[in-house]
Image (cartoon, rainbow, N blue to C red; front, side, top):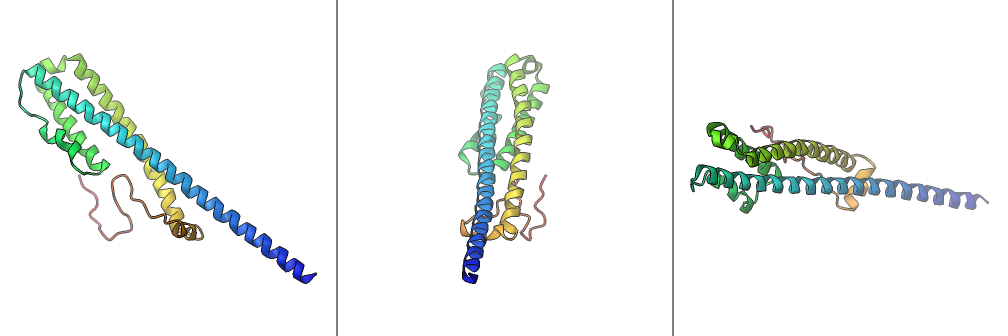
Length: 181
């Protein structure tokens, strides 16, 4: 009879551990999926923003009747291997330059297509801010699970690794000058 209770206790303990293991694994998979979805939305938004830059460049050239390459540095971004964060920064610089053109040339300021581009840029900025916040929040939650006991055993077994935030900062390294303007 005593052996039966020990066997029953081992089964209950094993089942409890299995349930905890499955719960942590599913939570990590869920967060990983949310992060990957956010990355996809960020990629898509940056591609649209890049396309807006190309359209803006064409409008500037056609309106000013000039073939000068004003945005050549930015139009070559697609061919470079840079992070989404760096792409976001470069595209913001490009649209800042486009804004200067719009302010300096009244004929650009009156162009309705360029106004539509600026409206779309503002929408994409809001979307990027929201989705990067969502991305960073879920990345933080996943990183917490990877570091904490007992979920760290599940993470190690399934090769989950610490992810960096959208800006590429690694809060666990010894680099203290991560912040750049």
